[in-house]
Image 1 (cartoon, rainbow, N blue to C red):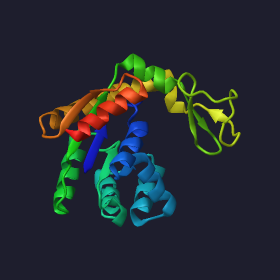
Image 2: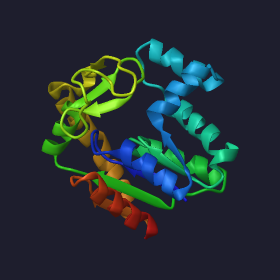
Image 3: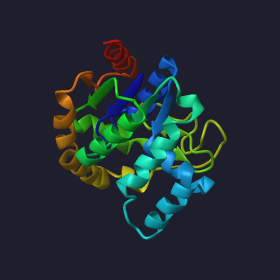
Length: 214
């Protein structure tokens, strides 16, 4: 099965997507992780992307689509994939559909995860990341055993600049502006589901499982 999981920042795509992909036996593709890995490994597309990033420019859609194409045609993706964080707008969705058609593939499920802005702000503002190992915590939902220190490696925890409330409010505004047309694009398609992601982790996952089962 090939799945697209999308929704606003803080809605839980990363956490739930990884769990769902494991359950389905498909590979999770988080766009940010894919981009960082390609740059680190200095692949041809990674180097091209780095050039744009170093210049402070957005990586063009054709480069991103190329990275996804390389990933989904790898042997371990034979059973399917789950896209998290892509597409972000209608042109990207159209480019993705064209690329998949070229390989005789299609998306079976498009799942939109939604939650009120107040909940998204609470989730994002509470995130803490370990500087040493990158493990994530949350001040309210999954706090570290010792304040300011990572349970896994003892490293120092910090809050990302883009997880400050003023920055988050701006991110949510940009998301709403860019993604509403994408929601309109997919909402009439076969296999589209909208789920309430404001509940606890187990309830949201149960809704996701129900969606993929149709």
